[in-house]
Amino acid sequence: MSTVMEAPRTDPLPPVVHTAAMLWLAAVAFGAFETVLMVAQLLYEGTATVAELLPQAGIRLAVFAAAVFLALRLRRGENWARLTLAVTLGIFGTLSLVIGPVQWLLAGGSIGEAVAGADVMGLIFAGSRIMHVVAVLGAVTLMFQPRANAYFKRPARLPAP
Image 1 (tube, rainbow, N blue to C red):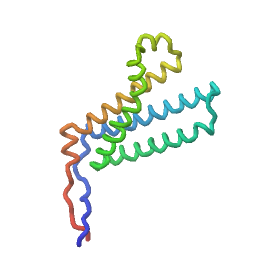
Image 2: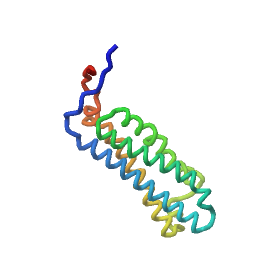
Image 3: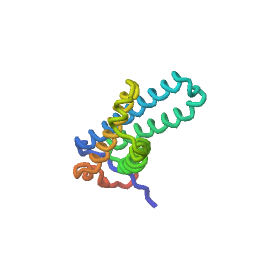
Image 4: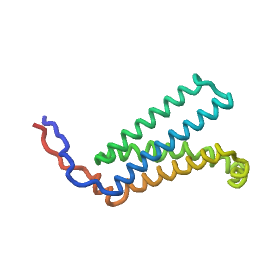
């Protein structure tokens, strides 16, 4: 029984894959920024303690670290990373970002009402959330462009020594 290993990639990184990876990193940055804003606001208002926020912050940190790891693997042409990003963060992550606002809109809220009643922190958070979602949707779209698909085709395999 022989083991196989992937041949090293010699083809250049397509711009769409590079941009997709950068958009994933931007999404992580926006997510981290939103987390800092949320934690700061909850601590400032006194509605939560540091001990109460640590588990949520730890989970977010793990997700951010995984996203960075996957984005770097994406750049290397590893298709499993592309598929993992698309399913976990592209689908479920996006749903987690938009479900609250969509439910609020369906319950009769309006964007005009939200903007009129928002404070500076709310506007900054909303702007970051919008950019976060745009970065994720852009990354997913670019990851499946024809040039990206060609880059992610299974590389030639060589028998291991």
